[in-house]
Image (cartoon, rainbow, N blue to C red):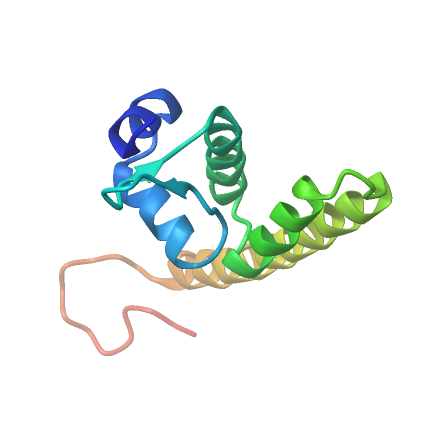
Length: 124
């Protein structure tokens, strides 16, 4: 398969497969003329990486996940540890966002919201 074929089958832009190769996440074969030649295994890896990115995994995490994906002797505990760490980071982000929202709610509640330019239209 060429880059266009892989893009159509994976639903990801052709640029994604080139980028993943550039950063070392995929290693497609090269034909004599230098074009990328993808196998079904590359398609599965690209789809896996696409799902990982949608889930918010960072590039460094994707390198770890891909190494585990390619390791036939990996322990599921290793994969679970990466996923649990990612979930912990998401929980931290949610807590920060909830704090920001609470601060904004307080500000909005204190703000009169009138069109008159008064110095005390919002008390803090």
